[in-house]
Amino acid sequence: MNASRSLCASSLAAALLSVACGSGTPLPPPPHTLQGSATSPTTDTPASPAVASALVPAPKPPCEQAADLVARVPGLRAEGKLERSRRALARAAELCPAKAGETWEAQLAVLGELGAIDEQKKLVSTVLSTAGAAEGAQKAAR
Image 1 (cartoon, rainbow, N blue to C red):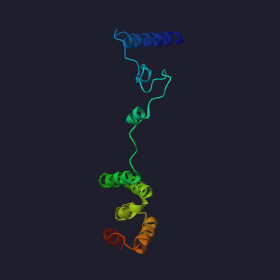
Image 2 (cartoon, rainbow, N blue to C red; image 1 turned 90 degrees about the horizontal axis):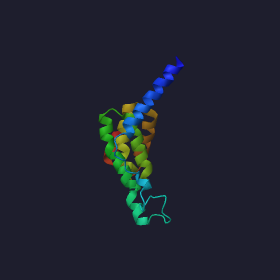
Image 3 (tube, helix red, strand yellow; image 1 turned 90 degrees about the vertical axis):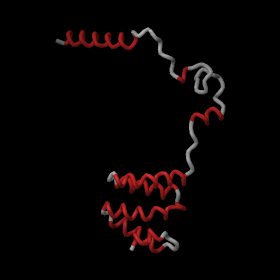
Image 4 (cartoon, helix red, strand yellow; image 1 turned 60 degrees about the horizontal axis):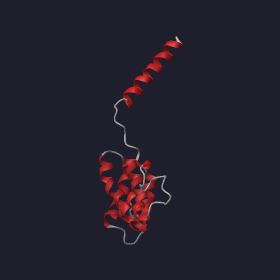
């Protein structure tokens, strides 16, 4: 029985190998093996900073990342992804503390929808004790 399984497995492997390698057209080498490329391990000099920076986009500033997260929240809430909304708003506030107050109204709504009463009460206290808190956040806190 084991001999027939072994024969079947080796026949299958041979068939797959012939299909994969039998096209007659050689595949191009992976990009990291191309001679003279910026990522080639065979070159003696490292890629110039200009080439390296072109390969990897620069990260956005933290407040732009925060704005992107906040912009996603209405869609997440519409999909019922409340926990994800809460994490996105918390991360946005962490990334850009200067604009954290702009997320309070949405945070209060999400916390209410989640039934996270203790967190909501804590945020209400923060909103009401912060001079200059946004009017929408103050309304949501009352």
